[in-house]
View 1 (cartoon, chains in turn blue, purple):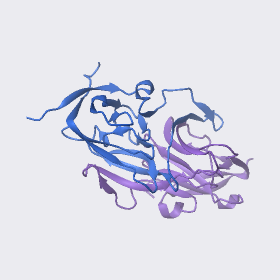
View 2 (tube, chains in turn purple, red):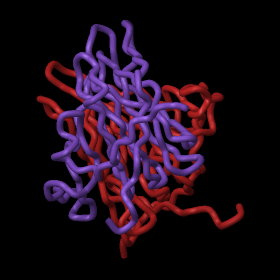
View 3 (cartoon, helix red, strand yellow):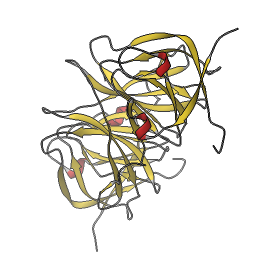
View 4 (cartoon, one colour):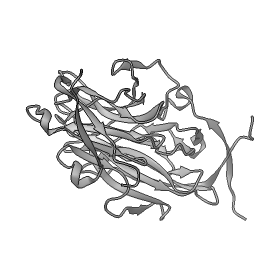
Length: 169
Length: 169
């Protein structure tokens, strides 16, 4: 019989996610009005980090499928750069993270990115690979390309099962 | 009576848009399979340029409204950085552009970004401000923050009216 640790999925807010990175949505500071008032600019929701000589930020699209069963066995981090995921079709996803530094699996937390919210992981933030909740979910990804080893992986001793809150809770 | 120059809107393809920047969509090279095959990575669709000391790339959300009437009187460029626009709710928009260098209004072209396509303007590419075709259209924007003057504007002698192709053409 496999042993799983169940953790409750939290709602994604700027405050709760602060140790791990940025939340990319329109529910923060008031926007700037530009283009003769025709455009609201929700400014500087996240900063891109690209460490090391010869590195740059690139844009990619990730098309992801749900992980079934939803059990996290492995997490990874990118020490040399931030990594942002922003849904291109509003798809919800889970951000399962642990603080930068030595990995401690008792510190893993799970967040529910809803209604078009995106996230930007800080350099070194441990995170599970992309976890969309619906099939064929597209995300714009902003991350680092350049020399150097920019991916560490860790296997969990006890796999984690994120548990979504009941509807309406 | 105002004088307008009507220009035909072209379909947005990588080849046609190459002098101006990158097209961000999944209709290019085959994706890489990552995350145990659960995710397709359409890799490096665009590179972010951030020129000048102390500059970095930032993420913002632009919420735009259609320009009515659809007449372009002004264009702008960002000499120190690229600027990407990627729809967050699939909204079509127009990319009205002219080549970098001295502005020549006879070289203005208009492209129709459809079905979730995004664009990344190269540094110095002249472009009209955001032109969504539907109300309340949200775009993820990746551009440059940092010291220096990074916006030049030019007024057109003859305003431009982009003309969309007939449906089915």
